[in-house]
Length: 174
Image (cartoon, rainbow, N blue to C red; front, side, top):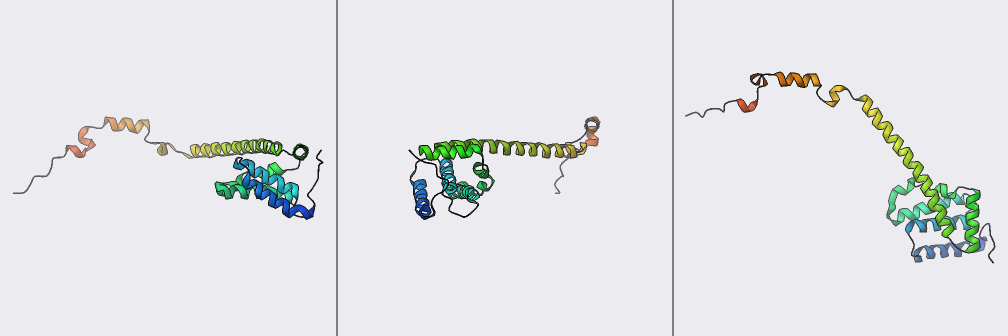
C-alpha cells in the first residue's frame, strides 16, 4: 500500500524532476492534461524552499506556452488550480494513494471550467458596459438623417435637386 508523503526528500528531487520531464514527453495525453501533470508534480516535489504552488502554476503556463499556445497562457488562471483547499489536498492524497494522476487532471478541468466561466462572465459584462456607453454617446446626427430632413429631401423639385445626370454634355468645338 502507498503512503501519503508531504514532500519529496531533497536527495530525490533532481531525479524525480527528470522523471517528470521524461513522462511529459512520453505520455500520449492532451496538452492540457500534461500541463496539469507538470503543475501537480512541481507542487508535490517542492523543489524550492517556498512558493512551490506558484512555481507549479507558472511551470504549467510555461509548458502550455511552449506547446504553441503562446502569450494567452498568461491569462489562464492556473493559480486557481494550485490554491490550497481541503478538496485539493484530498485529490492530491488520492493521486498518491492510487498512483493515478487522473484525479488531479479532473480536478484541474473542474477548476479551469469554473475560472474560465467567471472570466467569460466578466468579459461579457465589460462588453455590455462598453456597448451601453457607446450607445449613450450617440447623437441623432451620428445615426443618420432625421425623418424630418428625409421628408424635406423627398419634397424637393427635380430642378432643385441638381442631379448631375440631367446636365447636357458639352458640345464639341469645330
